[in-house]
Image (cartoon, rainbow, N blue to C red; front, side):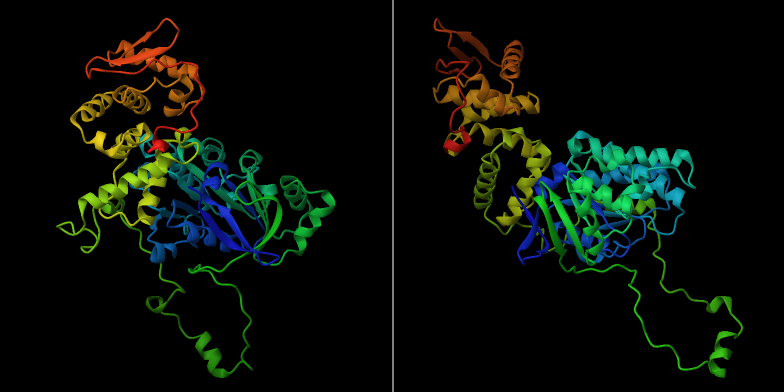
Length: 500
């Protein structure tokens, strides 16, 4: 499902959009000097995509905690042990809660340790919780420095290792890294090199301009154009943005950072005696005030309890005691959404976590009433939807027996078993190896043959060949048998699910 995020406008006034699904697979690097508008860009991206995907923000300055008031992000303060941060990160992924790791108020070395522990917790989450997540790291040069500085080597290696994992190996775990840096020269090359999308803002140093031009495939003589970019304008390139370098003016945002831009205001006309008395008056410690009230850290146990209860707590009008909707209507809508998910091209090759995210978003768009299916139930319903069994047949006791048998198999085998069972139930030809491989998320006919042998060895079905070399699959426990079909048959123009 393609979701276009509105990032602003091009130089000709046309809308500049970002393909969110493509971004989840290819990652993003943002670069610009201080004051170029990097944080504004990140805030625009977060606000526009908040309702589509889970978000995690590594925030060294506390600028993004304001997202909590408008979009419900959970603010996680850094005054915790490494073990606590890892556990909180795993639970954040489990409950799919958007969160901001607020590192404001701790020293630089502690920031690195906290970020490393939290990123490692996200990375090491169980496979069942690998939902798509947008992981935004502001001031990435602090957490993935190109060279050591005043911090200890232990802290640098821990943070750098976590950042490398995020950018190089995170995609398979659903983690899409979005990193922003003031200077490319200060950012570790093995972290920056993993990004495929780029938004390059104003910069002045020759080494940064040259490296930005190299990443964008521009000639060195064009590198000086980065000096002339106005604040809030970036040169975009990448599969999620544009195939050619494109100047984008970032749009407005709805939330704001706690930091403010300096504004000139008139000075007092003269220093009066009253002013001197006010300045040099005795200082009372108890009357001393700060510019901002510090945010009180939420105890770890309370934060973990919030995460555990998040999916259970809702407003009374959102989850009434007695359903006010028609269950049959809800079931029909769920069936329609499932069919739309499996009918997307190449959906067979996407992970269950990605398909589940697509399913939840489509349910919201279609206003499906009631609580959404959980992940375990979605897996089973997805296998049935891929088999493409008509509703009338699915309600019969015979098909329910086939579904019950498939539940004894692993996730990658259930869809393949049900497709074969449907062909046998309806006396259709046995599907070929290529089609069976696609059902189990592979392009290898050999994998389909191996899975057939495995299911036959386990007693779920039996396979035999006729004199012409055609394959017949029988289900002894169900009394069904397919018609003879060629194992090397080319993929059909339409799948079972599309035929309904």
